[in-house]
Each structure stands twice: as structure tokens, then as C-alpha cells.
Image (cartoon, rainbow, N blue to C red; front, side, top):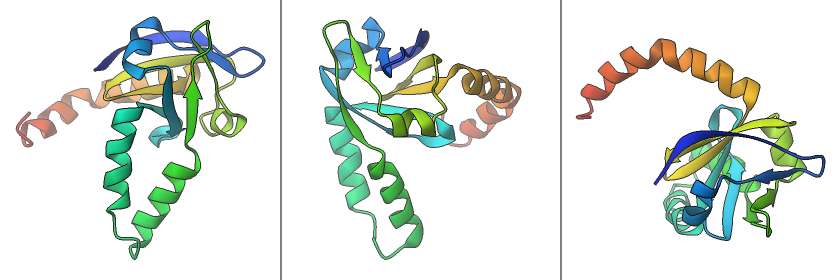
Length: 143
């Protein structure tokens, strides 16, 4: 399980250090793709296979399903840790998530999210304001 929040920087070559606490669970190779809210989603290989199977089962005749699957898979790339615990993030993913230099890696249960520091700060402010009402809504779901 992934949890916690870590600040790092992307170097001039597009490399990012993955926090040591995330490396073991991610493994030496894992998948990064375009996520929601203009961040990147990072999945261990096993979790990616589960998601892939579920998305493959969606009816391709539904426009929303086709659009989501295209978006999700077109941005996907396999990442491999180097000896320093870094990955190379492709330019298209850095552009999508507006990742320039300062980033935040967030553990979210089964995945890691990579956010630009500015976007994460803004999202956190908005989420904090809605936290209580979201918690009340989750009670209806049995949580």
C-alpha cells in the first residue's frame, strides 16, 4: 500500500527520484500514465494488469469508455529505476501534468500520483475545504 507525501525535483534531463518507501512496492519496472486532475498515476505491474483487464472489459461501443481507454493507455509508459532510484519521465507526461522542476509524489493506496508542486498545493487547499462534506458522503457508502 502506498501512503505519504514526498517533495522532489525533476532534473534537466527529466529524471525524478522515486522515494525509497515507494520503490520496494513498485518494483524495478512499473507503469506511469496520465491520471485525473492533471497528475500522473504510477502503478506496480501487478496492479496495472488488474486495471488493464477491467478496462479491456468495457464495451467499446460506448463513446465514454472508448475515450477513457484511449486517453489512459495512450499516455502509458513503462518506467525502470536506475541505480540512483530515478526514472526518466517522457516529455509528453511531463507536459500533461505540468511537471517542470518541483514535484510532489503522493501515495494513494494502490498507486502513486505525481503532481506539480503548484497544482498539488491548489488541489490540497480545495480538498481541505471539501473534506468534511466528502466524509459525510462516504458514510452513505458504508465507510
